[in-house]
Amino acid sequence: MPNTVVDLVARAKAQVENLTPDQVARERAEGAVLVDLREPAELQNDGIIEGAIHAPRGMLEFYADPNSPYHKDALDPSSRTILYCASGGRSALGAVALAELGYADVAHLDGGIKAWRADGRPLTAPGS
Image (tube, rainbow, N blue to C red; front, side):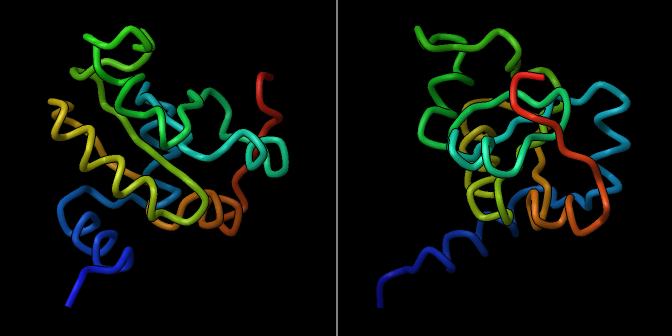
């Protein structure tokens, strides 16, 4: 029987560090790099966690790889990097991809921006 996306996400979550909103807030305050994997329309509709870098899931590996012409300097394989998306699926898959690119200290916000918001945490307008 073929895999489903639910299977892929479950395996990814078993391989990566799953953080709560409280843990992410604490690590953000300590200087962790937050990466928002959602599409631009999602950011416009819902906002972004203050200080997060935007890297749509389809561009993550290109932005993260220091050898890529699309590399973003804020993404550093030696930095603590925490990914998030809407509900945690894309970020779990993205965390596995970053680990394969040599990011040694990567995690994701389990439950994504939905969990962040449900925990009463603030969002800001993109680009603020």
